[in-house]
Length: 118
Image: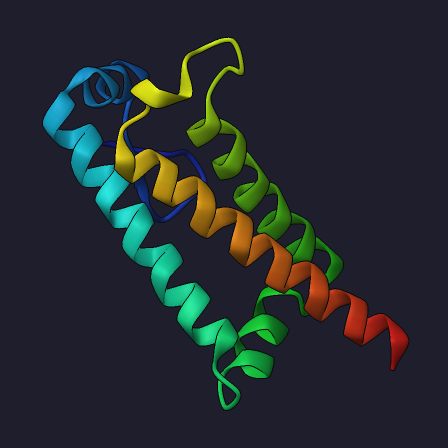
């Protein structure tokens, strides 16, 4: 790990990120972690008691709302892959992640619409 100049946290060097991306076990673990995070976010955002505070924190500023939407939209596109590829060959976890990301994006957009109308 290399310490990033001016920052207090370490970053992986570029060569290390390439190695991680090419390692199938780490890719599966990364996908499983993303899936669990999306399940948690969807559960929190669908619960009456936790929905408003959770989505409120994720959209409290324009920058946070933009970043939240960018990340979720990127997940939808990355997990859907290129439309020219056969979707029947897509791993089930990738399809589930895309569905969970799409559902969470819908919830965030709905929350933002409610905030604008009030």
